[in-house]
Image 1 (cartoon, rainbow, N blue to C red):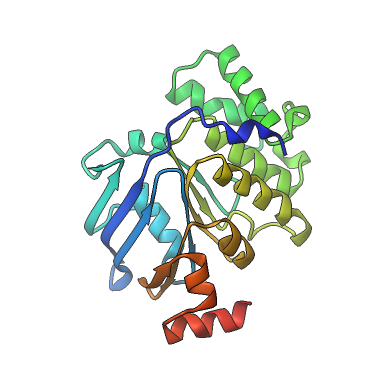
Image 2: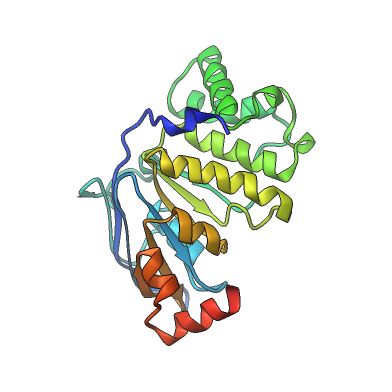
Length: 251
């Protein structure tokens, strides 16, 4: 993997969610969740399906507004900020790639910098090629997403997020839609970002990644944080019976 990812053009920042609550009708999805990622560090969120992990990421970048709690970026609350401006600071990579099929790979990446950062068409394409080179796909710049493998499309989605020069990156099950043989390359790219000092929150079922790349691990179940701490603490000496049960099923 190209080493360009190890050089962050934008300062990484800390992000903290405190006492976050969210309900959809009678369904309480988040029940007082606390989560922190320090500047330049990686926090992974693990837990069973339906535990609120993906919803937590959507609340932290205000795709869903919390019913209670606070979100603090770089030491200040952002709940009163323009949510679109907040999302320019937070790059998000979803489980499904969400690329525009009728646009080329380079056009997919250039669109955000042109529309939101005001770059010219030429400058945005130059940036897109640079980001594609960083993820090893410069040769695919003029291809359509449908002509790429799932792993390649996910790397394009990561390049698209990085083109906005985010201060924090969110990954929501970025490898779960991929064939097993494609997972390794995307995880390596994410690990490269982490080692380069990008602040990251990663929702994942990849326990090996959580153990080796994370600075902090959060275990969620039924909309609450059951346990959190270093990978060594959670994986080698889990305190809660629920986490012990979960690890026995996934390791």
